[in-house]
Image (cartoon, rainbow, N blue to C red; front, top):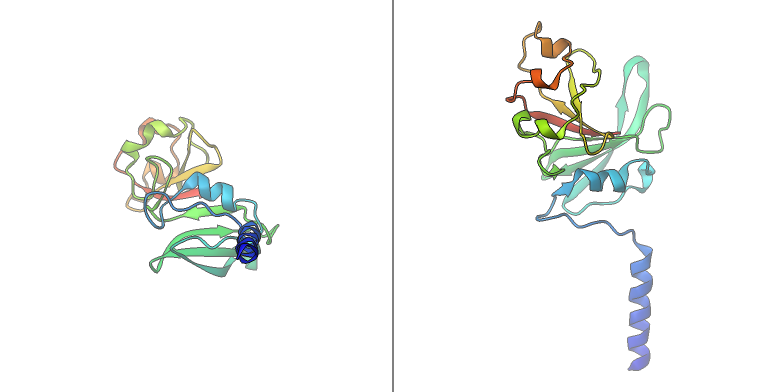
Length: 182
């Protein structure tokens, strides 16, 4: 009996060491912190990304301008795209960007759908340059985390579409469209 018990303990210990430890979702299934995804996925090999509790994972190919392509892995929650970990055209093997599109993945008060009025004090006062039609802000606590605000309802001539250089000029009603980790 002692021999069998010892063998079971050894097997369990050996198996536990073999698998990568993935943090459990906090509070409820599928809810992760942005910083957890950054730590777990950024700069990791695409082929070695972990399965996450409650998420379905799917490999994908992304295409850019001039026929350039690179690999990515999409994570779905209840059939909806939650986030994508992608490489780039220069290094197609490692994750260089994570784009979050689900309100389940949060960093404190920062999550998709949150109005700017609730996070204005959490972003850097300097607005980074963005291509026309996009408005990104930088998270004060971690410059690797960018927050994209939804400006899709702005008119084509709006100052928000062509760039804004002062956070105080951003309407509080704009909401977070995505969170990007690079």
